[in-house]
Length: 380
Image 1 (cartoon, rainbow, N blue to C red):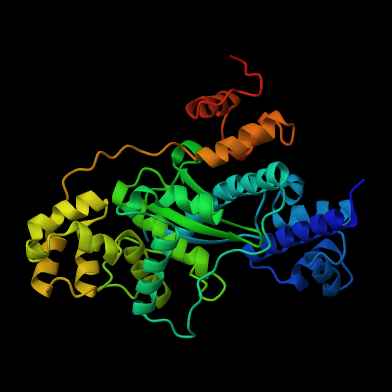
Image 2 (image 1 turned 180 degrees about the horizontal axis):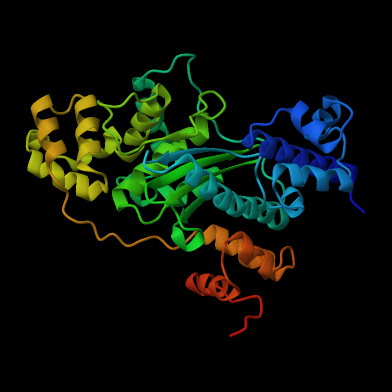
């Protein structure tokens, strides 16, 4: 039998999904209440807030009006209504395509959240946030980035340890995704997903190495400042900062990311003091730190280590090609949770595969990719 807390949580989750689906269709509570036969708007309001459980016959009528199957409202992996996303996405991607992609990624995030609780127990009540003044400056963002790089013990080349230490020290999962799990639209770099009990960074694993590093550090800023500085639903990572009307929050995130990946302690150790004016030499430093020449140029210029002509020259020079080996799909942490969750009976392989938009054989291949045993039978 479900506990009172479980019943209340279930009612609240269904209510959040009803509200999210209603708002997606631009319907008011009054309009939906009228179409499903409620006597007044207040009935729907109490359902959406979880104060009143929706009756099965009511949910059927609501699902018909909102054009969603009943299963969508009770699926434990759906995060609509509970999750907020901030995407780094090209303007060529339509809102419709992004919303479709978001719902697919939301299923993966929902599966991750379910498995974390089932296998490891509830998330910690306290999570790390950045302490900040009321009106933070770019200098504040650099200071925060420097401090986080030190606190996470990222070492001389921070990019090399960034993902592993974010996951292990901050309990902030990072998922690498592509079209194998839902036809990723071209132009999506990544996102920060925020739920009340979980944050997840999502990164397109087909991006260049240096772009992936910057996106992870950028989304880390959003993870640590979401409540105080909530980001927009979508931003364009490709446009020139000088040419775009770039929100101040995103500029703060960019400056924070630069300081995380290129702290002054690393720059002073890696760069020969006599060669700060040698742009070709600085390209080698960018390659060593696994960052773009543009990112290094702005970082050195803002730190007053190079002059403007050197900054412009460095920006226009190209990096030698990285050995751009793609990270494995999703992550070691996620696949371990997935393996243990299926093995212990918390979730069926078929339901997990559906949430990942995979066949059972593809799910088995994912397990083998991470050297895991396959804890379920396949047709093969």
